[in-house]
Amino acid sequence: MEHQHKEATIPHVLIFPLPIQGPINCKLQLAELFCLSGLKVTFLNTIHNQERLLRHTNVQSRFEKYPGFRFLTIPDGLPDEHPRSFEQFGDIISSVQTVAEPFLREMLRSGAKELVTCVVPDALSYYVADIGNEMGVPVIPFDTLSPSCVWVYMCLPKLIESGELPFKDNDLDASVTHIPALEGLLRRRDLPPFCLMDYKTDPDFLAALKQVERIPQSHGLILNTFEDLDRPFLSCIHSYSPKTYAIGPLHLHLKAKLSSKNAPSSNSLWEEDHSSIKWLDAQPMGSVLYVSFGSVVVVSKEEILEFQHGLLNSKVKFLWVMRPNILKGGESDVQFMKELAEGCKGNGYIVSWAPQKMVLAHPAIAGFLTHSGWNSTLESVSEGKPMICWPHYVDQRVNSRLVNELWQIGLDMKGICDRSTIERMIKDLMEIKRDELKKSIEELSKLAKLSVEEGGSSYNNLDCLIDDIKELAR
Ligand code: UDP
Image (cartoon, rainbow, N blue to C red):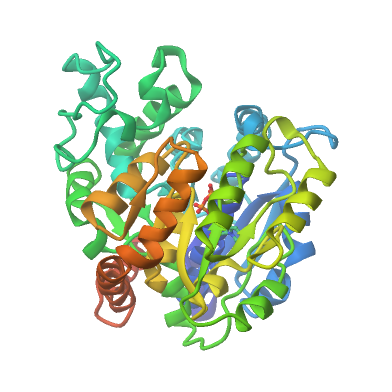
């Protein structure tokens, strides 16, 4: 009887990531942290992404050691031949929603076989909060965007009410005034792209509004950051969502909890090319620039050529990730990619997907030319590698501004993409401004590591989150 009672009160968390690399990566790390704390976890993935994950990683055997863990899959509702590129992100999200809604209702039903204590979806899957409220199951969204951008989203209604948005002219350098904690920092060009367009019917704008509307209706909010990095934004978000848990950087947190000296575990949807590490081993310390635009950004051939020339002209060695689906419009041009790799030989090494955390930790790497995705930014901060930022969508423009202006750990290239600017920025990062940027980012890197050690802010916040979830199961 005693045993049965104990079994019944072990909390069971249903984790449901967005069907893209960044959120899947973070949520698997969260799943493992929960398992290490003795919680039961069901990880709900789309069949398409689960197959890719199983093909390219050892997640299956890694999670086998946790008896309370299981993967569950649902179709994404798309035909096999669908390219599933970020350019069709809207289609993918709404198709997954159509499949997930009835599935979640069934899982969260009070008489269901296995009771779910709470659900951890992406904040962007706002419909899960509605289902949770309807079924009486607490929902704790995990927003994988940067806290500063979450705060920008929370301030959108205020920007509109105050009449600041829509902007009355095209002055992209004008300061944005109605976002507390970011006044004097953000210019219009640093806002998410929809703010600069006819936003009212823009799906990204509407999704951003819906997502932040649901946050106060949810039980809490999980963010991948640490307090020393994002304190001003976290304190603003707290006023909106009192149970906000900043428990990152998640990959460092997991490493600390596993006391792991080993290479970080991969959660990649593409096969990691470890020849990149061999290539780095042969390079002098602090001599290489790592170049990657993440898992979803698409670029034109012209932009790629500008980068190639900027990189080659800088004479700096580089490791460049060129995903097979990186070209705009779903184009695949084997000849172009082959010629590019040939043209870079000698100075650069191109791979289609890298073990990024290992790359950033490598002593040969001096800096990171990035699209400023939040995971990449945090991973670079964690390893103390200054950045050149070439941001595109979602939170990336906010992130790159803070990297340059607030934290002073990198250089923001914003919308510019010409070879001479790229060359100049690389020289600034690798030589002229190297010492000052390195000093500030190494300071932050130390704070990041401390935050996940016993007594650190992220360590304590994770304990509070787990206590909170245990309380829900009582
Ligand atoms: N990543 C990787 N290998 C690569 C490129 C990216 O493992 O060659 C990982 C990276 O470590 C990060 C994620 O993919 O965890 C990208 O997430 P981010 O938020 O930076 O950008 P997104 O892909 O969501 O735009």
